[in-house]
Length: 367
Image (cartoon, rainbow, N blue to C red; front, side):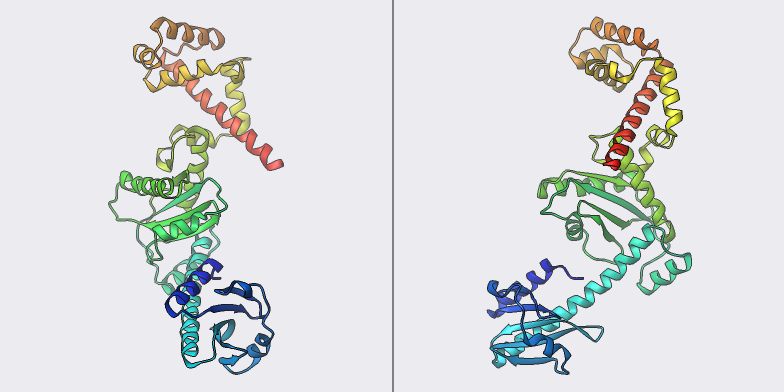
């Protein structure tokens, strides 16, 4: 339940204070954590006998041993080098410290387990409110779900980084999806604006980038005021993350409430998407448009179909831009200087992106 990293940090801290070597041993006698490198992985023969005895501590072969209990069951043994009174007291303190960690982590595990099941809709309505009350989690308060995804890094777990940013509290919950993804369920003020909610995501992204050199994508679900609806906010965050990858690949923060047309296209069936692109392009495929044409069109849309401003930003003559637009019109019969035609082509581009993403995803799942 407690990670080896936490256990190692704990006994290293005790070692630096007490100047005594300590080890943590599993029930079967294997040394799992130690300040004595040569003991790691070794089996201590006397541990099995000690575990079945009534004694909570014993001195043997130059060490003091102490049991660490979880629900009255001995889970670990703390070993302190030395058999004098001082090492005995240090061993008692170390065992007490480890037992306190077990209790704290078990409590946190229970909350993590509850939040995970809540997010995945695995709880009955009555269980949600009963267990929340038992764990002193408020029901009718505004909450938002943030889904954080980073580039996979074997040396870093996003879950642990978020724990540092949002220490264990009753109000905020952090739970892991995998090593590169985590979920933050954050309590917010009733009148907190969309900009303030997005600012939290931007701050997380900046910390991950500036302090840990991790590029991130953060998706935000809608604000919910009832605990049972947290799963809805999570589903929206999942959708926002995927839609952002398709239509806004360079954007770091995706808010479900700002997905607009992308959200509509994402929910269309493939047959309807194919039918639409076939009708609009009439035999022309997206592969036939060169990168120059597509980048020109993108900039043209960014500038609200303004020919002069687009040509200025692209550093090309106005006639060159007109030539490119005429070339596209010959291929598609769509004049992008006309608002209706521009809307149709914009949607066609988005539908094509969605279909390409969907095909690549299906291919990856088959491998």
